[in-house]
Image (cartoon, rainbow, N blue to C red; front, side):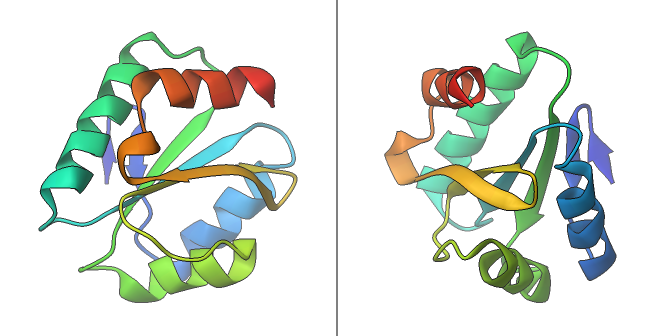
Length: 116
């Protein structure tokens, strides 16, 4: 499933594609909790970022309640302790930046992509 530039990370094969694709272009993973108001706020910040973000970045979202094995795989493969909401920037198969909770803002996402 895709919501504009935000693609649902819904199976383990997609995690592999994400990691492989990170060799050619940055990948940003957003871990979302469907029941958390703070996660909804962070998702709104991500959507605002997407409106003006440059091309050349792939954006993924995993909803933790419905895709726990996928979320767990992201945590394990990237060695980033799970939190929700959480944004993780991936390059060359590894996490190069991450933020959680109120640190996920339109500005922090743009800054992370510009710096890395």
